[in-house]
Length: 346
Image (tube, rainbow, N blue to C red; front, side):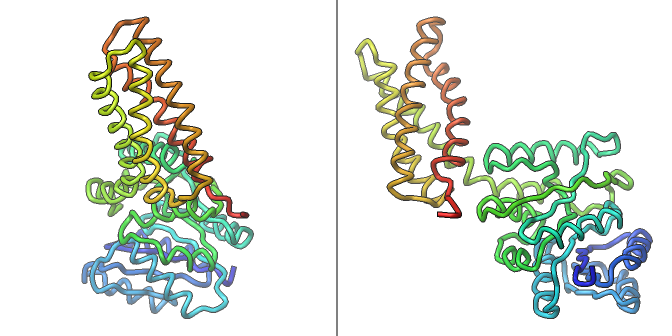
């Protein structure tokens, strides 16, 4: 593994933990790069001692964020090491064992087209509640909105080949959201993922982590805003149009008629937003498949709402919301996986 580098972004490290970790790493890896991401001056001697021990130390004058630390490391290595095969990124807080880092490194060599993820088991008792809860939320958001089933969305133990390092340098994000953008990019660019189970290690309930639950969570979840707003705004527009048209029509089949008219109008907005903003795949082929889906779901919605309303005699708007919310989730999945999915071999 002479051409695999271990990259460690670092901010105000626990020097004892990191020193022991680095010493163990040096027994297995020839190349280690530490990014000092603007640590306090009191750590200067520690980073200087790492350099004396043969570690490459890349210094940021002030804290620029984990995303910027990783991109600067990629840029430095690609510029200065022509024979590099890839890297393994890991955290400095004792969460990753050298044995697991070796496992990921071997996978990088064997799978240069894949992003390798070292994934933890969040069902274990030693997982802090905030980490367990955060992973459950993000994992389900990835599954619904992106179509990725990832066990550990927050893992910092990742393996990337030289080519993937170059590709991922173009991604946006300066802090923890950059790692989330990596995962989204695998879907957009049709890059395979490979998960490798690793030890689930938390020292002092992850007290050494610099993850800010408010700021960094906001930065991560805002990446999904376009997926949510595009589809949910269409859903709300359809409900508003349905209620307005329903109040005007006086015919017997007014629920079905209001459904059709509202969906015809809202579908134009929905297609333009999804084709241009979300999936970026607007052409006659996607338009045809999209309107076939619209017609099918339009009649399913109209028939189900009419049936439930006649059966229960409840509030028709509420019934419409319940039925169409289920259809909205199904519709989002069909659009993502069938209608707007680009064929990379076409």
